[in-house]
Image (cartoon, rainbow, N blue to C red; front, side):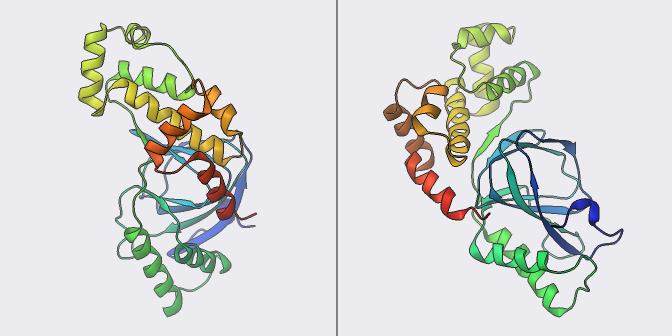
Length: 259
């Protein structure tokens, strides 16, 4: 297994490896001098940027532009692939993006990882790199993203809720925590987030639920932990957000994981 520390001082324009982290590991905020493509094979992970939080499951990928500050929080044991792409290659000015990793993308990543770190970018590898970047650009964006407000008082509330998604305190409680009147809190939240506080919190819960279900937790237990009275109401909300039933997500995650 290759790791970041094994990279040579001057690696080829594209270079990759497969690695694993234990659950609970946190890779603090950092940047890379190359764009980073991550493909997640098993487990669940949260990737945080300065203005958002992304929860990824097996079979999904993430493109992180060069010099983008980000943090990685391993919610479970995690197996993943990483490809670093130099900005000298055309088309690498893609925005931050989360997507489903197609069979073609995964095959191209496998080909890059199979090469030695010191390989020469011949015509074949150049074609693989160009096709990989092009396919990432074509891949539909997934919206499993939690936006955070810029107002420090609202952000403090949102960060507290993401740490405890099952919290059931009402909006009056959180307005007090933010040091605002309820009316000011609701107006500012809608203005900054483009949705009401209740809708944002529901999204926190269903994204958290998706991660836990993909990691193998029982659906009924996930529903209870996240503040739902029963699995039926939880399933309705989950389907409304993701367009599939929770059970379907578990089956899909099992079929896309590679160990």
